[in-house]
Length: 221
Image (cartoon, rainbow, N blue to C red; front, side, top):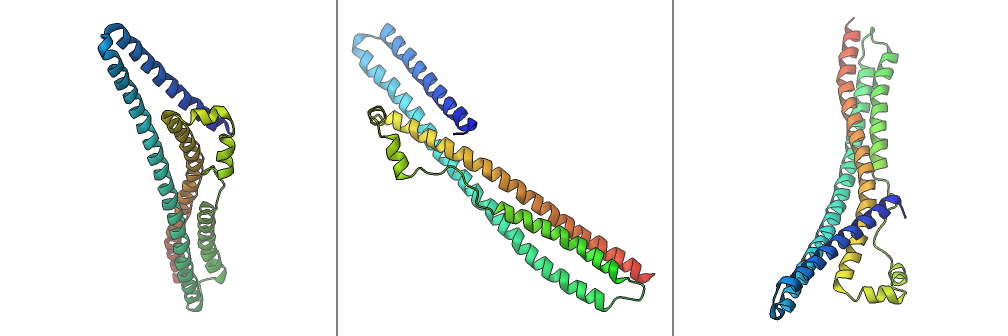
């Protein structure tokens, strides 16, 4: 288990402890200042509010994890688009290189053409490599297997705890927290690869214009 997962579990437990402490203070206040006829009803209202808070956090945990899954799909799609762009641009680049080589003037050295188009090709290959790295299937924490879930429940204490609605919500929150932390770390890495891929792709396009100008000037001399 990673240090980040431990910190996340400690944060969740700290929140639950504070919520329990707040609920206990509310109970104590009600017992001190409410009439005996109203105590039971007031205590029930406090417990219901506690349940609402836990249910809200549980629902938000699920929504946040779902958004991170959607972000993963978006990043993978962007990486795929970069690979497609590489294919089209490279095909066009080689056609242009052949045309330039066949119709070059006497003043234009073939080596200059090789250097210019070689530089552009190198930048495009770097862009392709980074886009491919973004699509790499990295391992991360996912939904537990049935065997793992049963192993968690393989003692009386856990079975007794999960019979309580709030305990189940807390368990769900902790699971989503672990999934989210692991997936977000990988998505951040993928996003960085995509950004770098786009950067080198843009540099390659700018370099294409610069190389075209330089070759044109050389051919004119």
